[in-house]
Image (cartoon, rainbow, N blue to C red):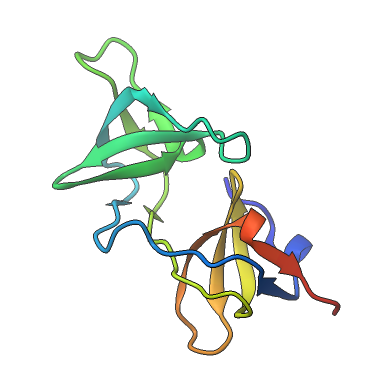
Amino acid sequence: PFSNWKEMEGYYKVIRIWRASTDKPVEVVPGAFVELDLSRRENHPDWQGWVWCKAEDKEGWVPEQILEFQAGSSGARARVTCHYTARELSVDEGDLVTIIEMLNGWAWVENVSNQEQGWVPLQNLLQQNK
């Protein structure tokens, strides 16, 4: 469900600081069921395609692409089709990162200086010359 990282090969400079919104991100595994809160939708125009989910004792945004919505179930729920973590990466302006995957206006990146990985909004990154 994620984009091919080869399309985004190279280094990206962080042009706007980003701080992770939680230190306990939701994480889901294939075959698990999650409860959906369809009343919460992401309204940011660059971040469409996210659904608020509750999985065990954590909740957060999960991409629609990895959910199989269950018809006829009591309450809104979906089955997860692949592993996903909502872990965001705190980055500072000027940091260099590489993009590993892209999804719905976000990039899963690795910080070049410390090898930490997580999600950062694409709008906070600027591709550097190869």
